[in-house]
Length: 148
Ligand code: CA2
Image (cartoon, rainbow, N blue to C red; front, side):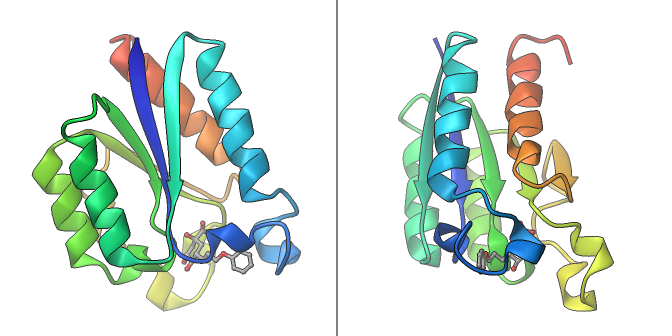
């Protein structure tokens, strides 16, 4: 069975409760439940993990090296623009990943235009809202099936 890991960075636990004009009305639990079902319907196991702490995300990425994770989908949230530590963890485990952003970061403040992840990512999604996670999982499944 294929194994995917979806990681969410800081403040994404607030989805659906604040700033709906920017981040929408869908909660993180709803996004995760949709992704688990989407993957399960395609015979794939999908784990999710959210943390507001950089080190916890680094630890979870390192764990992925030995828990059978074959592909990572990550929204590093604000750590996108700051975290060499999470970048190094992803490079260190050498598991392919897609970077996801709910909003179109390129249409926002200049400090959101730089990512510490994009040059290592297989692909980048920005501005698709919660559907971006699903597109990323679909892409990961295609990659693992060697059809994309
Ligand atoms: O667009 C995205 O997905 C971001 O990764 C979201 C981050 C932001 O720092 C990035 O530049 C772009 C912020 C996530 C904050 O999530 C909230 C959700 C609801 C209410 C408040 C914050």
